[in-house]
Length: 148
Image (cartoon, rainbow, N blue to C red; front, side, top):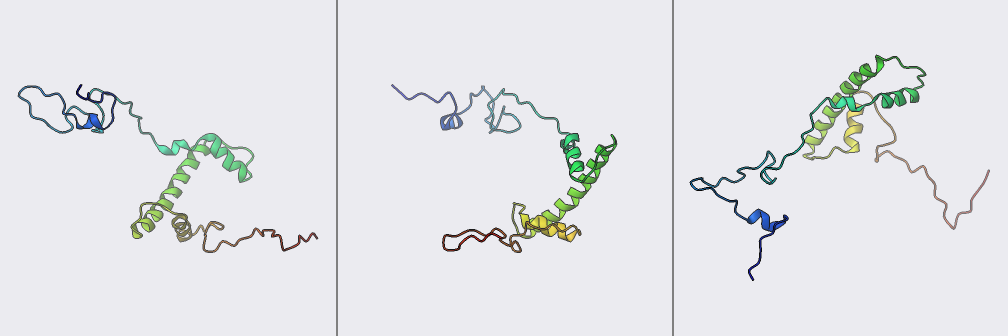
């Protein structure tokens, strides 16, 4: 009995020739979706792109304000906070991209963010692995604990 073609996916499906109509030339990717790898006739729900800054929700802004010591928040503050946050992140990320491109890398590291924050005049402490001190003293067996 000859082997049958794979019908549920796998490597055999990609190597099979598509069914051809008489008089038509074969074009790779013909009858496929925008991705090119989906089966003909499959549909996909596309998410409508909206402004991603709206992902910073009202409760998130309220939590940040509470951490800063704010008791009551006006209704207009939320949109204004999003505008300020977006402009700040734009400048920080723009500087981070400069550092990443200079290194010929594709990943933004902690050092990139630290250097870009320092460059715009907002230094952050405690994340730089070069200057971090090991503040936790470990108890070893040969050193007795001293209580004061």
